[in-house]
Amino acid sequence: MKLLLALPVALLLADGGLSIEEFRKLHGDLRPQRDELWRSIPWKTSLLEARELAVRERKPLFMWSMNGSPLGCG
Amino acid sequence: MLDRASTFRDRAVIDFLKNRFVPVAVDLFPLHRGQDAESEYYRTVANQGPRKVPQNTQGLYAFAPDGKLLGFTHRTHEAGDRAVAVRDMLAKALVDFQPSDLKIPEKREADPGRLPPRDGLVLDVSTKVLGGYREAKDEWERIFQTAMGLDHLWVRRDEVAALTRGSFPESLQRRIARFNLIDNTRGEPPMWEAGEVRALEMKVQDGRIAGKVALRTDAGDRGADLDLLGFLEAKEGRVVRLDLVAKGLFWDRPGSGSAAAPEGKYPVAIAFRLVEGEDEAHRVPPQGRRDWDYLK
Image 1 (tube, rainbow over the protein chains, first blue to last red):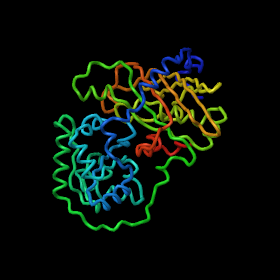
Image 2: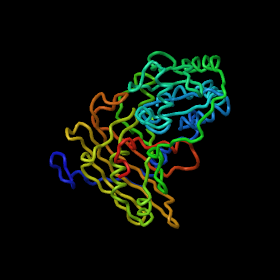
Image 3: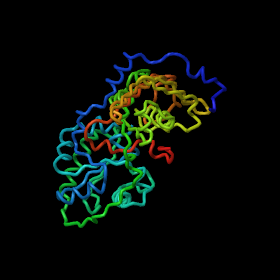
Image 4: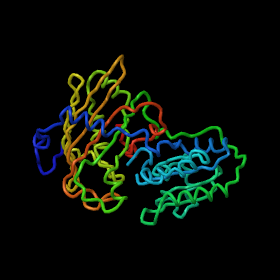
């Protein structure tokens, strides 16, 4: 494996590590919140499925377009 | 991210979108380039806005099913209240909208690259900066500093089979390192190149995953050193638990991203878990899927 500045793998992987307590706290704290208000909007992720629904329900469409999915990235 | 924490917390905007519109959220990247029906439809709508493909067409659009644009806004937070601008745009679009009996072609083309691997797994990935920021100068900077980055991880069928046997395939380790061990809390950072994974070690023993990862650009101006701990459980040939946390120090080039990263090395944690329940957002491909060798 190519190494930066000729650092040995053993040095890059120096001791440390996560404790189970840290794991539990961080895994709980970083759970995506399902009750956030933006999630209450019935977002579609397919433009064509959204268009079909809009035709059936005789509604206009609203599109949130981002570089990266607005619902899942960043 | 700003809109998740501002525009789409506005009750009037939410009511409009729940009751009067069909809301859809898309990543413009594949739609700018695709040759499928969905990409062509996107370009029909977006090219009526102020910026045309291949310029950056991100923003908020209201339009009729036939593609006719009814409104557009892409106000920055410096320009005032984003929610007010969206409310005004939605109200005007409803006035201008004329329902029509549009005939939709029944056969839809689906881009297989946007679908998760058959018989694979989808995991939620959440990222948070744990400290190191200067005091926020305004509400918008506070949103960035406290934001949780969201993404997904796809696991191939053969990798799922390996996981059920208690091993952690190297292909999956590399995918996690290159495409998920990133700080995406202020926007979309570049993914790690294969050669930037300087050290990688993830092992499973008695259902416990432990590992370490070192990531560096050649110039050393961007990098991360992380420890990993997690738990893997399989029952009757199915993975029923794949919980993982990576924690460590990141550093980045000054001025990269939508907002400034903390100076020097700063702590970041990234959590992985199997997606739960039915949610349209589970269909969103991982950001790393843009890379042609994502599933290799």
